[in-house]
Image (cartoon, rainbow, N blue to C red):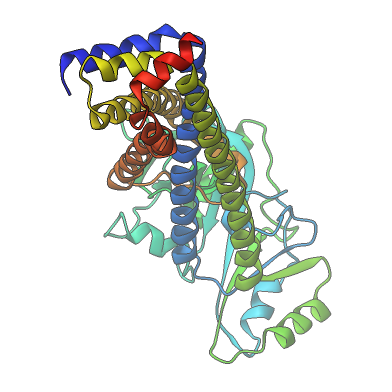
Length: 403
């Protein structure tokens, strides 16, 4: 494209700023929705896949009334910190069909020096745990040192590699890969370290209901069960409910059916919004350029008379629509990128399902796809209009305008 054509394209864009910037703004909204749709879908899918790969429990037993909202305490790291009846772990371990049963312990969510948000402390039994320790082994090959802790990806570690709870410092052995929910703001400890944190809290006047009246009996916040092959879950649930009141039992299928449904609904909503903006943007561009073509028939006729070929005139109209698309695309990508990556943590906390930002390669792929698609929206929408412009009879158009 020569300099003359480029000047004509820019001059026409600026000649009618209300129309040009209005269309670019519409394209910006479309680009924003496409970018959010791509990043959002990748983030939700990645979060759900990561969580599914890490949930090794077939069944979770928690106290009745625990806030679960179709997602277990294990998935969200959130509960009212109620406790299971005494003796429930031993009873469950003795049931037919239970291959492994391991307890987890939750201390009340507390503020720590590591973060502005509240932090959940989750304790596990190293002798029987089959859920948390596999996560830890992904980032820590050796055994967890005595008194050390493992933190979620959003926990800020002090310069000396520690996190402080109740004025007592604990060395951080490893930081887990992000999961995409509130477990990224959790601290994982073994039973002895959990007891140390409880004692430190007690020294500060904070008392946790960590034990029953029997000082030797630990109080469990949840019990995670791995079933033997062909185990009868209904019979297992019936026996637990018959023996203990105030417990609820959730299967892996129950937990993930809710998550998968929520994820699908969110993705559908996002892409419906994208489709809406796409239809509106294409319609607006076609109507606007069609009206502009009628207003500029004399201009196009004069360009034909001074030597513009039909092909060159067609390219001129397509290039004008390309400029509208390009300006809107980069405006939309700029503002959406700043907003999305600035508030990604807030978004992850409020969508209610696992949410992990994609890897750099995936993000780059989304940006490239959006840019290529958005650059073609304008030219594709006005291709028919540009073809009609190229077929204008110069002398007939001039006479029409004069009359």
